[in-house]
Image (cartoon, rainbow, N blue to C red):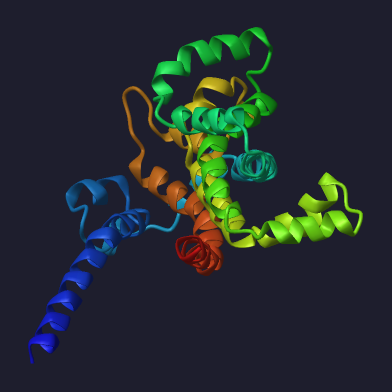
Length: 274
């Protein structure tokens, strides 16, 4: 009886928490179908009557230059994530298999880098990248690889410790060189943690606003978060178009997360067990 009562209480708490976390999505969806006046009259109400409109979406699509913006965001996100996965997995593998004091020191440097706030290095970084003519998409990708490598190396480092060394020794006996050992033996075994690293970096890079704002200085290079700023001027804020645009820009990453969520759970479970 006591157990059943506890389950009911936990179920109610779970439903309340779910409603709390879903409430921002509800506000975005319902207000994206309203006029500006309808949003100000009642933000929480469903769209109805004269305040219900569908024109917010085509207008937001056009003003965002959505196809150009999504091409820029996809290019920067995919290239950055691929580089982070490759460089981090290779670096972590070498650091795990090299039992020296400097490998431990380098790993501690990567761990310590996570403690440095971005705001403290923001201005010197932008100044340096400007002198190197790197305030452009390639420079932005370079910075994402740098900022994303620390956490990714730590995740790979912990996972690679569970990979049996005997597999690599057998590959050496079969005549494999270091690159073949990594690409044929080690990297396929890292699939669970690779999926986790990929999802974490895709979600972060896709939604990032500050770094592109500091780096991208041409409208044709703007990513989706930068384009969203178009709806917020100094004297006016077009919430009805902004919410419609926000919902459009959220769809790709929501679809990506929907298809990859099972893999990230498997990756976390595999890492916790090993």
